[in-house]
Image 1 (cartoon, one colour):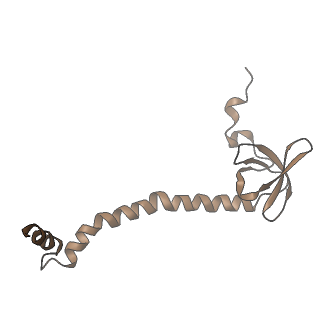
Image 2 (cartoon, rainbow, N blue to C red):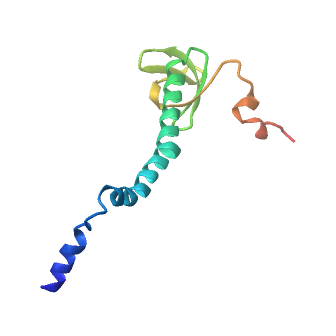
Image 3 (tube, one colour):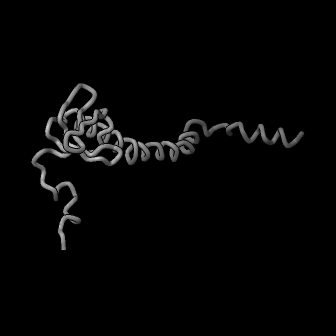
Length: 121
């Protein structure tokens, strides 16, 4: 019986500490949630917003990389889908949100990161 009494007394906060003791115990938890927000959640939200803006701005003639890795040229833009030519006279419909990367028409190859494998030595 003494064990249960000790357990209950340990759970009850000591008189006189009050709000200050609770804040001391909660401060690390609040700091961890703040750090999580600023280092993980906020940058991810920014990347999602940038991707949505790029997808919304896709136009005919852009080269796109789809989420499955296929590269094609946009030939038709609709509200939620685009027509992508993946080979000569082969056009597929793709949902806009499945576009991984959008490369503008006149964008140089170095800006896309593909210059390392271009030279034939």
